[in-house]
Image 1 (cartoon, each protein chain N blue to C red):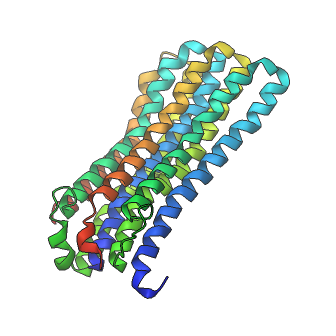
Image 2 (image 1 turned 90 degrees about the vertical axis):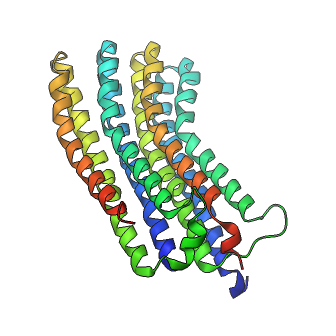
Amino acid sequence: MTGITIAFLGAALAVALPCTGSAIGVGTVGRAGAGAISVDPGKFSRALILQILPGTQGLYGLVVWFLALMKLGVFDGTIVAKLADFSMQMGVRFFASCLPVAIGGLIFGMIQGRLCASDLSLLAKRSDELSKGIILAIMVEFYAILCLLATFLMLNNF
Amino acid sequence: MDMMNLGTAIGIIGASLAVGLACSGSAKGVGACGEVGATVLAEDPGKFSQVLILQIIPGTQGLYGLVAWFFALMQLGFFSGNMISLTVPGGLLFAASCLPIAIGGLLSAIAQGRCAAAGLAMCSKRPEEMSKGIIMAIMVEFYAILCLLATFLMLNGLPYEALTM
């Protein structure tokens, strides 16, 4: 019965840590954005687009959390049957499967936030080069998606 | 509390962390805004209402923590007088369910406090752009709401009949 508690902890971390990373990243861009707006209020919409970019990691975490809870049968009530036959080893495996998106989401959210904040200083000088700044930020996104893919494929086995 | 109720005790630790950490984060965020707000007010006392609105924004995480704590204790039967006795794994499941709002509330409130403080500094230069500062700070709020949602759905979905002794 302890196996499922470890699996559950993994699911909780899979949503908590990416949301934390996204919150920190979005907050970092917001800080830089406030500075950019106080210089030129017309840059608000561009700053907002850059602010949304580090926010995707939290959504990935939510997707993984939802998938994990579906696999554990929390939503359809089959968790009662799993309480007994979910071994310790399976619980640790489940926890480990949730780790890529938990760790990756936390760290990539923070890194992407810093990257988008420096994109804002690019915008301050050349306001028409937003698309290049977005492309630089999306390079980081790729690795977050790889983490999501790894977690998804590992969870699919349960 | 004897050993029979160890699971319930672990569950209550989770509920306490949900309210304790989320409120700590909010206090830190609101405090960071207050520090910047005081310097803004020193220049122009007329901006008090704007400072107050931006200062309140990082304060919501503490309320989310309180909601999660209240819901958790209701699920344990704390308020109705007959507490359920969770098994130890049940208590751990319960505590793990409380973790998202505890971790997410703590850290997102700190990040939001910094963001709102930067919005306040912007307000001292361009008071008419306050709404933009509010929108940028509210973007962080979304992740605290996701954490609250996750905690709520997990606490709601636990099979309590199978986890009690």
